[in-house]
Image 1 (cartoon, rainbow, N blue to C red):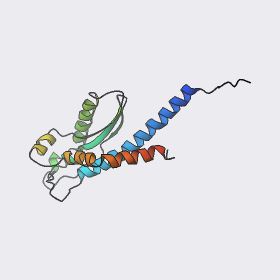
Image 2: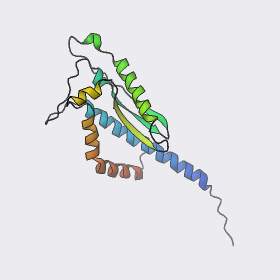
Image 3: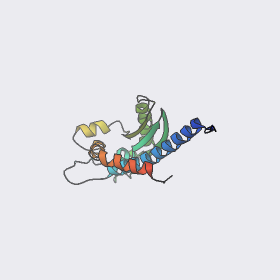
Image 4: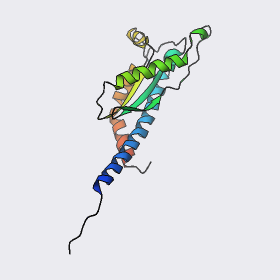
Length: 164
């Protein structure tokens, strides 16, 4: 007796890919939140962190997740208050708008066949602050690189978990 396989393998493959992509987005969102928290934190231990008098630079730190060429998550929701006397230069909306535009411009340069997590500090002077030896987001990038093996292991565990 011949057995006929009526399984729609194409549909199962598409469903598995959707589930995988959903898990990737959830995991990268968690990592993005950790990265933003790390970047905004004033750290001791030899790290020269900048003084954000207007609150704009720290407010501009956020992330986007790009999946297959499309920005699917955009998180720029911090509002760091200005130091006393700097209120008139505080503009969270501009800081976050700059960041989103910059992150989107970076996203357009990336391979459209992959998923990317992009951390940015969108104020135009962030680069100059770092060039003076202060940590804006480079230290967070170094932290991610130093913990890559742990992040990969955590991601692998998350992929096989039943968490949806």
